[in-house]
Image (tube, rainbow, N blue to C red; front, side, top):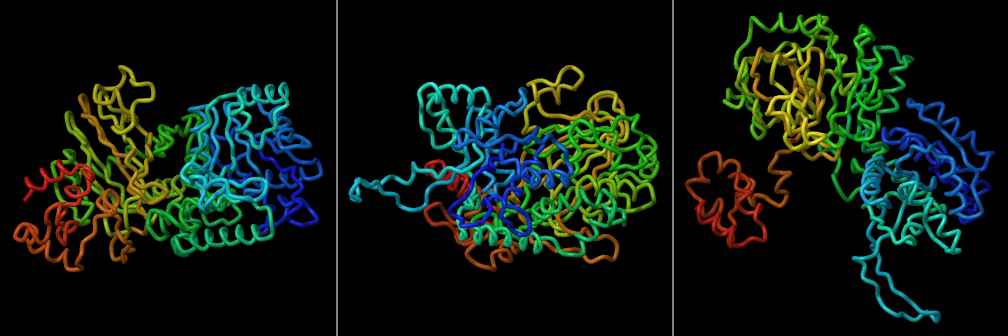
Length: 605
């Protein structure tokens, strides 16, 4: 519910503040675009005067996703406007998110968190901790007391409430003539719980001309960060691949609408913008990747048009299923045709050998017992069929085809496992996502499992092997593809995507993973795009730092073992090169548990 009926006298403008232009469009349109891109949103109800409806209708006409748009007439007070909008929402609505349209910088990520909190407790509101010192004064302006900031929060919007609970609250307000200052105050009056969801300081309300300037600056910084995050050539390459060389194609419009989200993803993954403390962080970019998620979400969870595969047969019922929303794990049914699957197997079969594993820290590939399958790599664009599949993957993921490695084709015979592994390489930076395609139907076993995510209903049922019964899993079905992300939109590792494969207990399993990096992945004589690596250690132990720039060199020459006291040290006197020696866990994992730390250190030394 977008509240757009205010007058905004403090702005001193001739029209209501929410219709003033900010970077070329009315302020109210920014939040409408944000909510329209969220798959959780089922409809938008705009509460505004009839003469301003055309502003929202014009925006609606440009939206790639046509969800229902309704209008309601505002009332004399805010609660009257909310009640008017509440009467317009569909009866099946589970939650209503009430948002002040004068807050153009709200993000889909913050809204999603607020939705989840409201779903859990019944009502939630975005807010941020108060920064200034707040004093309570009496009628004469004398200080009564200084309030504790730790317990004070500045409330924002959206405010998300279960509709039935809000209706009950309005009945109480009308019955007892209560005065309420915001929407969740109605729920407080009922004696029901309300949760504060931590939001962003950039979610300001535009009330004065100074606020306009601040909002303009935030948006400009976000746009500049997006421009810095993706170099022109890879971006243009992605656009050309997505639009198939035709700038007027409908696919181009989808790409342009999703562009800020794609920029945010790559910016965060490549660590080209800060994670915290800046308006240019991925959290405050114009769109949030978790909400738009590329075509995987934009196409919807029930049906997927042939946009990604023009040659696909609708009779095969191609569709995209969201397996796990937070981890951004999707299952695309019938992504490949039977002919494409058989073609890949024919190319690979004569050249199979045991594959290696890429080490996170070194970027080197070694043969390892971690993988007990046989495999080989196809060249990127090896033939027209392979090039077509890679172009389809680029469209689905909104990442340039050049960011992907060649298809790796794997064969698992009975009782072969694919265990946990770490990924990473300097060539093209960290692996950002994986598209895992199944090339045959497996008689028994071989599921792809995500052990950090429980099965949706606690048990997947007898059609899954014992290995896959209790966790999120996808059965290997010919032509299907699973998409999962190794990096979160904020640049952190996505631990929900930790995956493994169950043993193939009957038959043979063929699959082909496509690894896509945050930067261009060089093949042949190409020069790799070098991107600073973000290691597991950096993310797990951010306070673990070496004291000397020569630590890596010393560690490489064996000093970690030969000079333990200097290099590693003890808990009471940490060494100079803890990180280079790989001992961050020793000093930081048990922080605050001195006895355990001392014991572990003594054993190590």
